[in-house]
Image 1 (cartoon, rainbow, N blue to C red):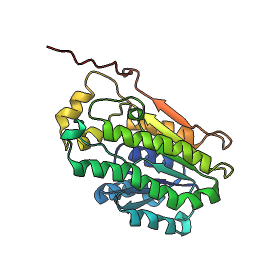
Image 2: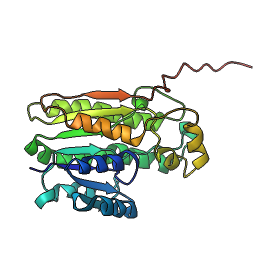
Image 3: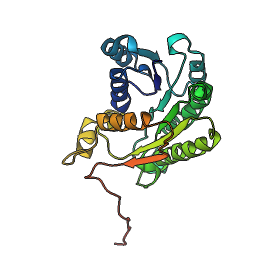
Image 4: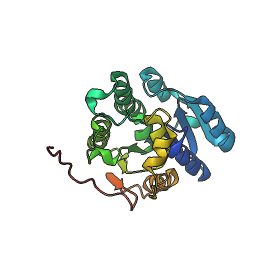
Length: 248
């Protein structure tokens, strides 16, 4: 039986790298994202193994409709909740409300609605859910109140979902990476290439392919093993020190 994975945010970065890796290993890949041109290019590359679905994680009705997929795409062995974004890294009172709402709706509401809709199919196949959280769920930084808060939700959601699914055979994992060089910073800064280059300058960040290999490892472990949470960073990144505001 050919296995099927649904990957949100498959248009670039970790999602696209995972689509390529899973397809190369014989899986059927359903990829979602907002940029239809990127999805079509990935379909041209991967062929019949890839099903592109253009949708926004904030369109909750469209997410729920994915439960109606049938035929060769009807089974589901893995849901990879990869789609996510962050607002500009500014203090909360300086951030635009619309940006904050977009992040919360994408990182939390969309993830919950999609997962809920697809759980019956995952239970039927004794599949797995892998959620992309972040080290921001654990380590605070200036400007990260909303993004870090959403990723802390993803981590806790994953742990509690494990409790809900006890006895079903479905595995749940929260992957919590540090610095990965993708388009993440470009999106966060509104396309500021210089800011992205400065962030990753003179260090060796993880790559989308590094994360894809990690996700593949988790997904293909023996089914009696569950990785609850997995935190990883590049060697050149470590934990932030305490910040002290000094007078004068």
